[in-house]
Length: 431
Image (cartoon, rainbow, N blue to C red; front, side, top):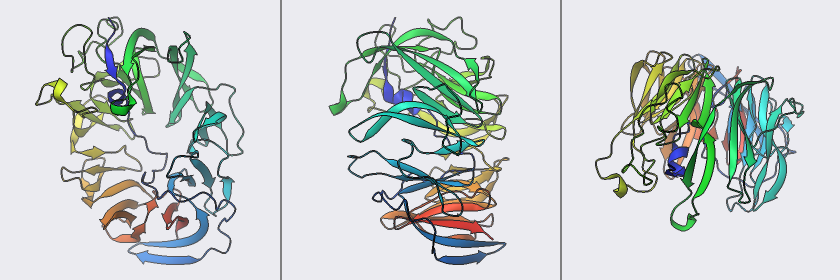
């Protein structure tokens, strides 16, 4: 029997992954396009010393609205606030030279193990690009022949989804999901098995219910420590009884029949690259394993009847960390990240951010309004200063090393970080 599922709740289960050496903030200043020929030539420099660190700041004329650090390269983005034009992305090196200019690729450029995932543009409608996705090297050459309708790559492995239309309606299709490695080899094909219906949108964005054929794992996320996180697609126990480990009853079902809500699901767990369920789907949402730990949230039953919940209600509890055996080791956070370079950022119940180590000990106190990754002994943090959060860096003693004056900032990786102030990029280097 087919069930009605809200797409937003399915998407809410998907984790937000960091890049290989730590990300930047997602806020961005949304500066106007241009500046791609400026480079770092004639850039001014400044030094800031605090404790054991001396950081050199190189001011450039490169324009950007957002930045992340991807294996030592600065991945830049520009977004038209009106969304009349497609977002533009570029990649620069530590010397401020463009590896890829704005518009070279349709999606943000993020590297993993020396390769990056991006798209081959097929068409562009109303400011948004569409195309097929593949793996590329730093010369811009496509390194595998295979392309996918969607490709998510993380920690040396990615999930590629190919989509085959099954009817006259564009919404009717079959998904096949495979796991590939950095060489483009398909190392796992996830099993398929059931039909489900998804209700898209709400309010002014109501669409008809469409039938989607998917697989046992409704969504597939990041890979790490030999495990891939997966999510079952709502109340599907009758369809997956023969699949190993996937018998957990999904909460949120109003009654047996065709009326249900997915506010309480889907359930998330972990499989290995042989397709074996290692940690059965039992969590409301999860993140990828990294450095032996993964952040998870359990489902919390609502205090009111589920039909009275607002659209997109979040019923996940506090974040905890589990090990690869599925054992809880510590937790109690309202926000949490994957571990990178021995640290993760977390938030307390007051919404203040700080950093913990792999034993759960607080390294940087939870006193900041934002945090976006650690690297090379420095921690990116943000503080609300009037009408905007400003970003900078602190060390493990909470000394400010990079002043909290930037609109966006990345983590350090390979001795370099990137920051944006007044729409232009600064390159930060540890001396």
